[in-house]
Length: 452
Image (cartoon, rainbow, N blue to C red; front, side, top):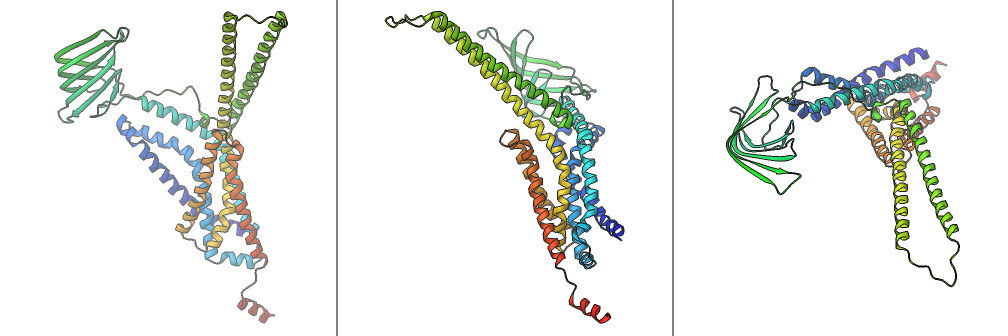
């Protein structure tokens, strides 16, 4: 009986869960498209590369959509069960709230365990490949890069045109700046001209008319050259229209697994300990040197004033400045490592806090759905969005505070789970009290008495 009941409850979750996955992922993709549309169009990226960007972005999307979909599915499933009076029937049959929640909690625990593995193995690799691909896309030169009214960088040239006719390729109000190999800075201005690309799009030729060339020698700023011209041609080659793929040599915190980040944290802590020891040793050495000098000079005579020694005072001041500079450098190094450790530990805790949020959302979502008495998708999604926004604000705010050292990373990442988990347990406890004092409706009690 319990197996049939658990299977029925789980089947009620499948549809809303898949629906939430599709809707939330679609919203993320639309937001991503808005962010990258200018980059894709401006760089002339081929469709397969665009699809690869979206496919690699699914990694971080899954890490967020699965917990949120669990919340949506729980609210909608239990809302439907409550609206159809099936929760009431279960209570009447003596089924406790924890028995109703047992199957969803078990499955969600398995999902959480899978997300932990996903966050530590698949997500870092997808983030790394996505970051490498975006770097390569940003480096790619477009075949038609000149836009009017904007500065366009091409192979050492900075080009700006006031007007550009897309049909005739005529340009007006041209300003070009570049640094020559002999250390001069050239500024070329022309009233009008024309641009021409080769068929492959990797060579740009500018035919300029009625302009001037202004050159300044950086080594000798007083030397200034000004040349007028009627026609002038500039040829820019190797624009690089092909996307050149290259792997990033370094990995950020979101491109590492928890074990990799913990290894770096351990190395940073050892480095910090070494810097602290060096700092203390530097101070002790300086004090020992000063005390040895004082011992060598002996106590000053009481009836004789010390003669000022400017050279000795300058040496002492220089030694103090050097000591201060060394101590400040070590302190800055320690502070920098502490910040890096906080950033790594935030990501480590996040890899586990987000999966555990799935379990927390079961505890919150089930009472919400039961008490909402509606299985409509609007109510389920609305309530889920409110709670997930609260959770996400805690997560993002905690991450910012932890990165700046205001709160410990563990507190920052787990505070939302603890708070919402406590709320969820309190709501489940209320349902348990209602079940404990549950009575059959009066007409059912009369029928039962009549049967006796």
